[in-house]
Image (spheres, rainbow, N blue to C red):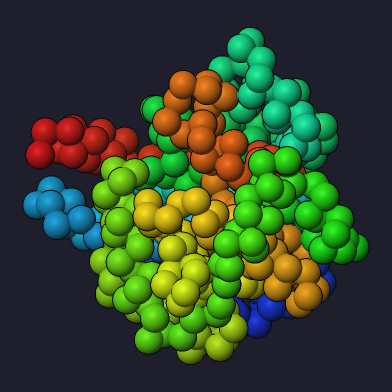
Length: 382
């Protein structure tokens, strides 16, 4: 029986994700929760469900629609499925086409001229030691060139089927992570491990920095929303130093308000510093047995305190205490070049001893090629 696609309400969507996460049969991204759709201003969020035999809900997608205020684009939109959809791609003899054809037809009927998705299916996994060896070998230019310690047949099959169906991978030209969801993530497996196990997997510099912070009197605390402005000040300083466009305070306020309305512990704010003065901060998002390092910030002042290392270590310990399966440090650039600006971020994250996980990445499908081409030209010329 072919799958049918319909809009569903947020509560039904949420219950499906919670069931999937509780079974731990596959990873569920917080970016696919209907609560995240309310965080994203400027987008119209829609919950979509796939229904199989007997009207059973078998898959979901949070679709974000971007309406473009361009005369020739009236009534048309970009449709984006971040880190989704949440489906079992090859269950019951199905393939990628079985899932994608009905939702493409649905979105095209809703005025979408292009669809973007980023399946949360592991394709390859590399241990920290493998990545470190590759970083030291001038023969490798990108992370995708490094040999994998594990390959997932389903992830590799999905990549092949997407490309055969005409989907094209969308990536940053400079191997960065700005403007596109990263393809490579660093995550720390936690299930069955102790605090001592995880600390021992840190590289020597990480262990040294954590101990330096302890001796310097650095404290890490879970902050209330009254301290969100202090975090945002650190974040603005980080944006100026690292030359990226910062999000306004209103974005973080909305994120905390919306996610905590769904679950008071969905997002936490951490601050770290000495003498009660924060030098580093982070937002941790928790969903479906995993935690994510959402946004981070640090001051250039008193860097000798190593508050950022102490902050991450406390967040990891809290995840262990709460029985979570993974702590996800989020994306890194695709480069293995030590002279690239993104290399330092990779070195910092892989220093935790976490795995480098490679997903298929973001894929685009143009439903109306002339409109998609016209949009690209418009964006280049404006």
